[in-house]
Length: 424
Image (cartoon, rainbow, N blue to C red; front, side, top):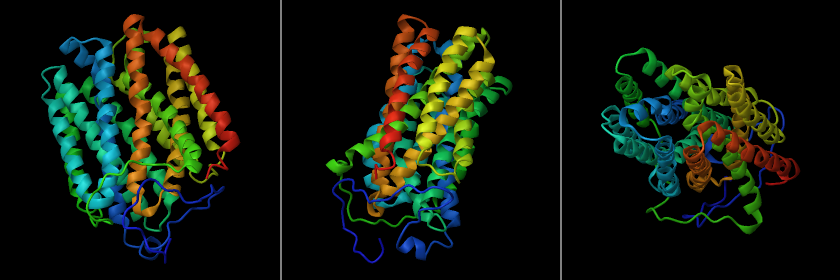
């Protein structure tokens, strides 16, 4: 909002009245970004690359959990806990990381976040027991929790033409695409390359070295004075639309968590053979379809798309349950494709809404709060699936998750269809 003074500090989350647009229309940032947007291409590309690499690294262990399980001798429940500790570390970090970014700048947050990911990769590479895995996953959670809001805000603020919609598409695609590439790359190296539990993380360290160089191109200027933590507060009149956007995102990422944490083992169970590349592909294909779908619908109106995405998630969950009953690889891949397309649509729509409504002076803080809520959808459901698998079996646990989550997607789809357009 050019021409109006910005407050020195923001006491909570505020929203501006922005409506969804159909067709190829774009929503542009106002003020100084419209006037000085040219020449921002390198910081914009750097933020996208760092976000991509951090997400690649967090999902590289996915197909390797079975190998760790055999080497260190722990149960399937421990697999889910190792996976979930990432979300447990990310959630509180995201709560503080956004406000810190708004105070000290994107570069000063992204640099330490990359360093933590380097330490996590070294711990994975040198792991001598399950405690090493827990520590590495916790550091990954802190890294992404601190950096995700900062880097998404950097994308919005350095987009060369001030196009928030394009920045939102790229941010969600980097997160989902990186999440898809990670398991497939690790599965390939784990199955066909030497030192499967070492080489994967050496490759990650190479990518992180380039990310550290890219971080020097990020904006470093702070927009506030000294950091002060403010608990995000949503005005009463805007709680429902914000909660609806978060519900859409949480459901999509709950299904992602299932595919990344449990579906590699699920694939092994239904096909009766162990193949790390197949296991990585089963998890990674979901997020690759999500990233591809986000670009496919980028130029199409998004007002009705959250409903379509939730319906695709429902179909994907039903197909996943069917794959267990028929022991069909093709149904498993179809579930990944359908569910991934649904997750891509829902996450893009939810992230775009938050980007468009977040005030410029506290955008990183608002985005971090959104990611914090979203990652509850990563940690809690997968722990429940692990607990159920421990007392029954993996196939029963996955089918039960599908039977509970699919109706929830339908309920939110109905709510979105009736209130989404008017929710801003």
